[in-house]
Length: 152
Length: 397
Image 1: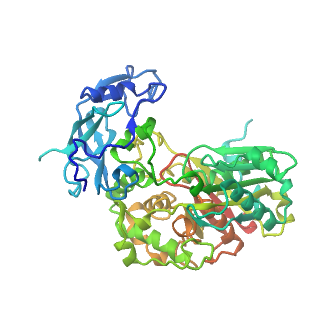
Image 2: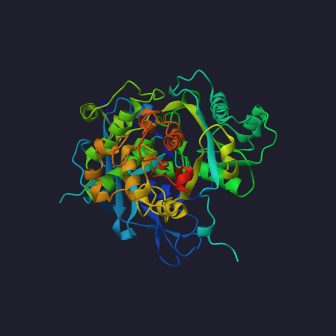
Image 3: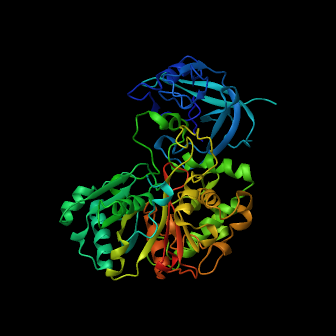
């Protein structure tokens, strides 16, 4: 394990997320900076949509609204990663990634890490809540949305 | 009146007359650069067919192959270029689609003699399994890479985990896929893993890459090139080899399979929910007609899902069906990946699987099956667009 204390779940040096050149996901990444989870919802038919697109996939109304959503959900799937696919992870050891479905946004899914012991037993269906992880010293600064299991 | 799609078909309209490949190398071990590998494989396929390479008038590939059609045409001095098709999408999702596109070019009268190929020198251009050297990232990967979901094993493990959860599929089902590929590679001198057998104990003891994938659940990364030549069926018998006919092909994916990141409605899936029925419809065949299957192993779990979606068993039957005994040539219930495939022959992005299906139909595989009139290839699972292919003898038409 990495002996260096870090405030982030994974060590620094991984790719930094930025919006596409056309700006599609700017509101999403800006929202995370402000501890807000924003998901697209169609202004016409109210269909939820994530990842973002320029129009609603159901009714083709352009420019869905970005709606703040409570970052709570259930583990839909998970993986424990052992092999380092990046030099920043070389001495780090295993870590857990989860796919979380958000029921109050029609089940849209988000990938994040599951905070806590990387060797913890992970249960599909377990309730989780979001934790905003800020990388203020990064250039450019950015924020991620991590997850932790809610106590039963 | 326009003919319906069902009346427009590739079935029996084109034939594979030659196949060729370079030596297959571990990644970084090729003495030749990628473009030279492509040329060698193409010339080998022409030589096998007894075809003057200058008669080629089209090229088809996939996964953004870097060996450009116009450069190939100039390098080979072909008389004229008529078709140049590149299948959208990454991974091996296009390994059968490239054949379908070439076949469609011929059937539509756009070209007469099309080479389908894939060339890959990972030593020259970098590996898929490493993601170092990226500063900022946007699009789909922005939602994944900062969380350590960087390379293909991590991008696909959660799909397989979900499928296993939904259908009670055990690790042993994945293991059987790996054991079958390694078993077949031991009889195939082309295979990179020739002379390197695998057994259940070694599989179980191997390190995790990303649970539920052990090391042996993951494809290799290699250098090499492979190619085949397609002509209209009217010309099929002019060449040296026994012709192998395209019986059917299909390409694509179902509803919103491309919803990123990990938001496809059908998540625990290999993306063949619509593509498998399309293939069977074109060929007029069903799962029980298929004697041998080459199914792209990016990861073993993808093969489990792909075989289920092609109707060889229900997902709930996977544990029962997927045993080594059932999957081996010459007479297992469903001989699978009889050259060793991506796991143990060569990761030629699945094109080695297409060549192996041709060999099976000809009766020249190093692991020849008994029922070889119809052979199936299933391209890269869990990606979109995916693709698949049925090849067969003249008797199967």
